[in-house]
Image 1 (cartoon, one colour):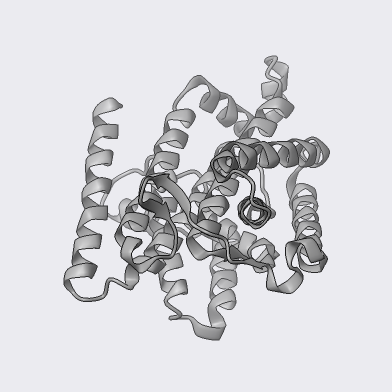
Image 2: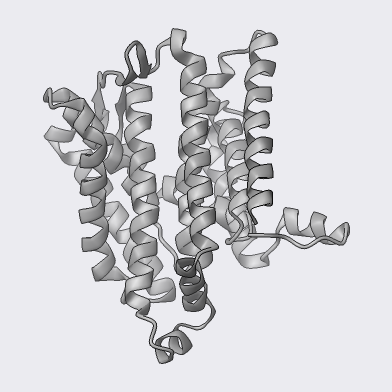
Length: 317
């Protein structure tokens, strides 16, 4: 297990460096901006894999947690609070919100849970859209840089484009390896037990409600942190990040990746979000993601699984 993990770390790191050098040497360093945001969005999708793929639940409000993290960062800067306190504060805000929401909706199952989380996401979106404090439809702009080290910040500064690319990629990989370690631990076995048969898990004495809530909270906190950093990088946040279509994109990527494969979700998320942010889909961007979701859910078709099966190999989580 450790050998495989070390190999992955080396390959992902080498891949990140190769991409950065390639785009810079080709004179297309502006691509790093889209790659940086793709990494933040991919964090949300990868964390959702924990809740959907390994605990067998569904959430359609993951985008709302991303937005709440971003708005927390924006409000801290707007009202001149200590920015260094932003990181623990956003974690606390997301934690409280996730606990309140999770305890309310995780009693439901199947499509009832999906509808409940969708409704929660819509409520948060409408609140952000209509609240003068949150800037209404314009959101909050002018969010300043987040200082990491003296002279090094998470910001949209062109001079720090390369650093921000590596920071976002490093954050994404940190979340990925944290979640991968988690699902291979005893806690991950409990999540898988809940997914396999919730009634049987309860019969064995497993507190399924607690396990599902923990998975929900971890996914929410990861999404909130991604939103926090993305708001500083973009210089602001808008309510569109909390729209249900954003959450559907995350679900679509998780579904197309096979639901419980963190590696595929990471790779596919980076690819699809980069293409989307480059505008290749244009006005059909939302429609393309919707089609991906429909194909994945109804036909249960997975490109990666088909390719691996054709070469006689089995997938790994």
